Image 1 (tube, helix red, strand yellow):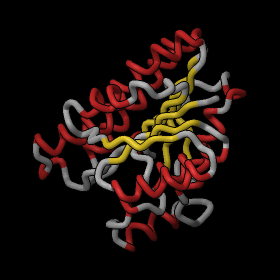
Image 2 (tube, one colour):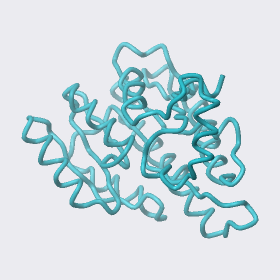
Image 3 (cartoon, one colour):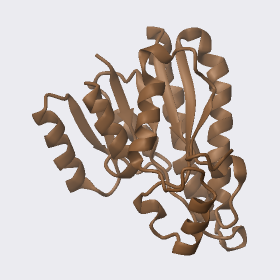
Length: 242
């Protein structure tokens, strides 16, 4: 039985990923930060369909957030699949970004995923099988004015993923990134319409992506048959990054 840990799994892209893995009969550990009621409803729904799952409260922007999450997994099947999805943006010019804001963003988008990869990959190596997928962003490769720290945190995540793919490849563990484009989520709801229209106009398929577009890519890359794909950054951008 496959087992996945999905961080930030109760909303948007994370929820879509959990839904698609639940449909594949994965055992699921799902983290949330503030959406406790949503998490409870989600777990109740999955369990009613025979899915073994738990929800874990975890603030991965906190210094000890990843450590607390790992402790909370004790007694649950060890994941063979890790989806580092939890993340946030900081839509500010660098000149207006405080040290505290930058550090919080780096802990959430880079340091916590790094800790989870480091610790959970050990079990994957011992079983000679594992799938790690990090949700990045198209801005990691392109840069984004007004989101410089966010873009930097995702670029760091991509570089770590490529390096870890080299370290773990001979052990049957793959490490990949999915780099979404403009996805219709709460995080992007604050982007003004003119900016959205500009991005859509530059996107060959001429629409925003959906969380399910990203979830389908994740499902494909975590399959047991995808063992020859590692160290990749897979764009789910509707062609924006061409």
